Image (cartoon, rainbow, N blue to C red; front, side, top):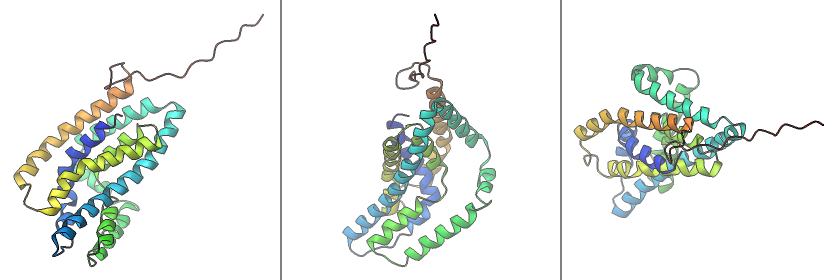
Length: 233
């Protein structure tokens, strides 16, 4: 998947992030010095981006292994189909998935760790809050991870998720600096648009996997050459 889609996914998903993680961004410790207030919120957001980039490293490696095995087209189509299912399945059912197994206790421990860090207003703690925040379950982060899988390389996966995180930066930074800078009506309107944007991205994943020979959108992927048959005299 082309890297520009990563920033687009992050930018579209950032309004969803404000709704899901906005409470953390709004409640970040405040500092009386303006420059520390700003730098602290920048560090928080770069903590999130750091976590996303690490995800990209890992899933880029997985994607590389899948590519070597010759399954990259199937992977891209599968991710697109899963994204469509995520749109049509009611949210209450997807939320229940996070209440099973080890996920719920892990989320509880992450939130507990974030809560402890709130008691310390240092720059390191704000960066650490961002790192832990990036580990919390988020549907749009999973979309970004899907894109990093299709880059078929470790560096490409890391770059994809870094750009995804940078796409979320403008909205999340604005939200953490001023809680009323993005009105509730605007956020709700954008959330209603998000399923359509996600469906468009799902179609892009499917088309890419089909390899129709459309430049940039569905490029023809090189096929593995078939060994020439031996001629026996």
